[in-house]
Image (cartoon, rainbow, N blue to C red; front, side, top):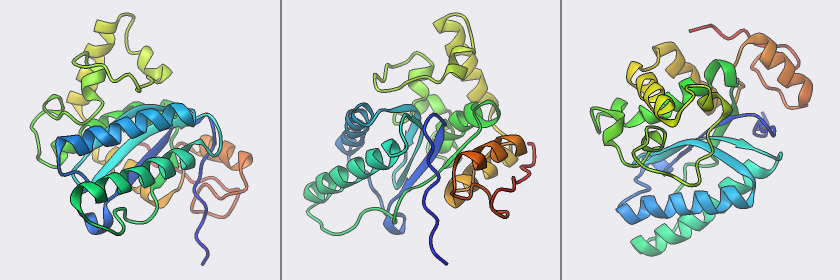
Length: 231
């Protein structure tokens, strides 16, 4: 069976996962993390992709982004991926592939899953037992949203602005949201949808997406929305 093209539509948030080949480490030094962040910042601006959240783990990374054009996200990931591999291979005196094939991604419904996806991303280091609290991990967007650091390449989604009327209120609300965590159902849905490429949202959202693209957006027959269990 032919591989489906990625589901990419401008103006919608996309959850992206890129893994190291055979789950090998893709970051060795602090400079490696900083290099990838620099590449993301440079190419997000170049290809008009708003980066809402990120986490860089030792052997993979997650992004939550909204592209402004249909080819913005693929161009961003291609440019970042190629440049980082050249940098990493030179630094480690190695050759060959670094990534586990092409990146995984899908669209998510903003109102239903965007804030949950941000919490999911920032809680990755906690789930991996690297830290006890999200605030202890330096390579995620959590510090930006809680006022500990400013990541200039981060573009907050409009739903983040609705968390409070002042920066302090938004920072406190977001910290509480992450501290509260997400349900197992939400975590599984966010992981599985990104890895499978099927859209994540309520039936009406999925049906509306299907009207906007010829590419199947759900596992059912083309044009038919999938019921997504509420969690």
